Length: 368
Image (cartoon, rainbow, N blue to C red; front, top):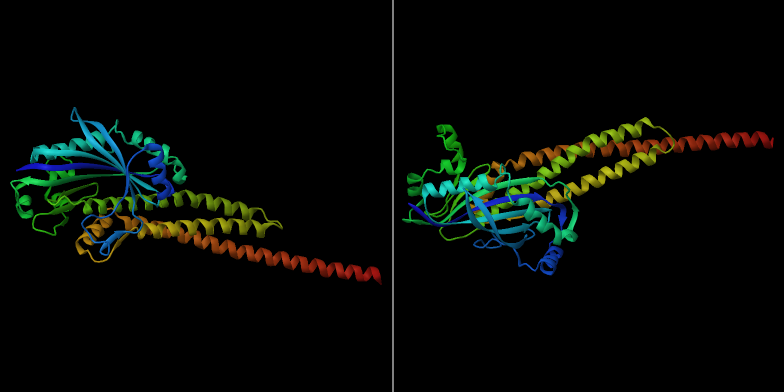
């Protein structure tokens, strides 16, 4: 069995900014970098069945030379920009006429060469090349962006051609999916193969936490695009979670400081803090909803199952729940501050009324 045609796709996603103006980015890239652009869409799936809420912008970054297993390999580089601030960089290593062991070795060597543990991976250089021309399209760019990585092993043509069942019987997917050279236990093998999907008799998708195997003889990329979107949603939720982690201690310190300094301006100080927290909650809630709705799934049951399994495998719901809990804490603090500001204003009003009454009494004695 040989892999006649396919590719190994290494993804590295960055939380580049709070938001990205895609129209502005498209114009800037064409003007300053002279590169080609396109709006991404799912190729084989009708738009009414599943589609991007805001189609991401795809930029062609040309060819990058990689060193994989001691050999120079030309990989095609591209970037996909999402309006909620994520950029997904992709390096595609072509696969031609390899036996199964050679294909598995190429997947694992690619991960070692440009994966998360690699020391000389080109991701930072590609990101710097991208950031320069697009700086004006970035709203509140991240100084040290968070990252996610994912690896796709894609097969488009096998010889001899075979069904999914035959492939599973003849090929051992475990070393490819795990990156391990030692045999795994039976429970570990079952867990790696747990998220397995097929629509036609000759296609297959197997998902794990950081890798996926895709057999797609028709050359469609919809499954890969959906997996990239799930990774982008995970990364964006992680960025909100870390931002709120940093905000909660700062918020407590500001509230404690405001409560320690009691004076006639307490109402204004509480109101200022409450407005700040309300703005933070509104911004994060709005963007989190945009991230949740970034991919609209209606009629395509197969892609919906793959997408749902990826979101479950990446534990996006857990991170989203953590964000919701922290937002709830900030909302409660906002409500408490709003109440304290109202109380401080009422207290100030009472003091003013008492002062006026006292002044009136004094003036009446003076007149008498």
